[in-house]
Amino acid sequence: MDFEKIVMFVALGLVGAILAWGVLTMARGGDYNRNNSNKIMRYRIIFQALALLIFVLLLWFREPRG
Image 1 (cartoon, rainbow, N blue to C red):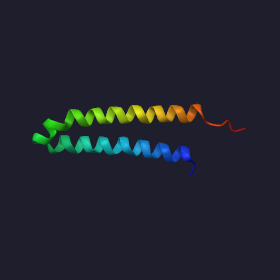
Image 2 (cartoon, rainbow, N blue to C red):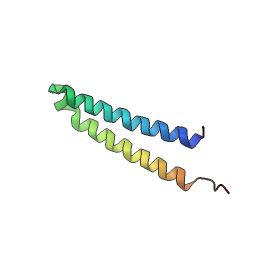
Image 3 (cartoon, one colour):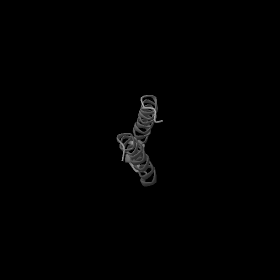
């Protein structure tokens, strides 16, 4: 597997894990949800932006294959 694919799978995996963490937190409810749901949402947005930036940079610096 290419380095690019590994980096993208790791970035997308982190976003998916944070999304699952947020969904489980909301499903659980209670004080933990009230205290942490906004923080988890911010983490997800930050990691989504980073994953998108990584994707764009990987495409930008990709060697042309001909």
